[in-house]
Image 1 (cartoon, helix red, strand yellow):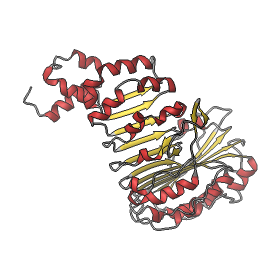
Image 2: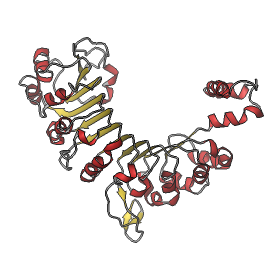
Image 3: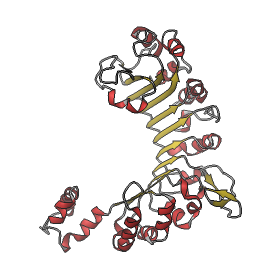
Image 4: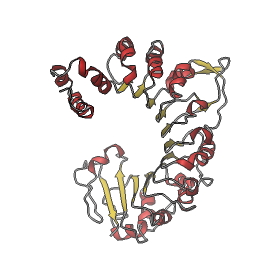
Amino acid sequence: MKTLPTETLKDILASLLESGNSLKSCSLVCSFWHSLIQGLSHKRITLTDYCLDTKAKILRLAEVITTIAMHVKELELTLSTQNFRILEGTKILEEIMNKGALNTLQIIGLQNCGGHLSSDKLHGLIQHSGIQHLAVSGIHLIKSSVLNRPNLRTLQIHQCKFVDSFDFEGTYVMGAKYSFAPTPLPDKNGFGYVEKLCINVSVDTTREKSYLKDVGLNLTALTLERYVSWCNDTSFREITMDNFPNLSSMTIKIQGSSTFINSFDITHFLCTGNPTSLTRVQISIDMGWMTTMHLRRFFSEGYVPFDIHQIFGFMHHPLLTVAVVQLTISTEAAADDPAFLDMQLMTECLFGIPLPTHVCIEGRLIEDQYQENLDEYIEPELGPWAIDGEGAPEDDEILNFQFWAD
């Protein structure tokens, strides 16, 4: 057995790891296999509050971290303030950083940790030189310098607020004292090698517009999520496709009322400039709540609160091979309302221009805002277009239509 190639042994052990009982009872678990088993079984560590007795799990991990830290390549933290304090009181983070194997870090929902986010341990962890894939979500107080990563390849930023430094003589925030001034996201020099970026632009649009302009040069994949409302600056006129010359895949998700979605100016973003590498595009627009009157205008009178024809026109770009447009509307009207049952008028409104064969259009009309149950009732094979309300609750009907270009 010792003559088997290492790759074969790893494949065998990987299949055994899918069942813990099989691995424990396997006679092959001996000293020769020990290092390979540790390398596979301790590749990823997840510390989360979504399990029983998180404190005990952290303390047990602290007891063995010295022997397994060199195998840890992926680390995910989703902890409350209390459990994050417990983690900081151990040597877990230090051991993982010192061993040098970590390349993927995901930190989710630490917004309640307050001052602990200014700790040297956490910022040192984010600045770990080996990290290539970084996802940071829900951190409201984080130094902008921690994201200056020369080796970074994939970056996700979601609901974060960046600051230059912390002053513990300031005001109370989340139970801890702070006085800080928000600063722009890190400049382009810190993200010179980022290839994939997912950013939720909901904290400070002005700074993020400049940020996207700076870091777009090297991006190959971009996910842009935006909730638009009256209280923020939603215009992206400073950003065009020319800012992303190497972009090959792009996803845009917009949510909000029809009035504010118009102010996002998505058509200017898409239709200004000439992307030279883009092959895949997905655009998802959730227009929120519409009254029966607005629905009638939308479908029967050809009223569209943003120039959707320009968006579909963008889909004719010669380099595109896959394009999906999703449109979601919540309504008070019944699913059999003649205002939007006329498929001819609806397709003339939404699909008034010829579409290339690589484009798929999906429309979703949801009565009584049953958004959470939507995916359950979507049929992938509906033909060129169809209305499908079967299976939905009688009192909360859902109307779906799907259109594939011929």
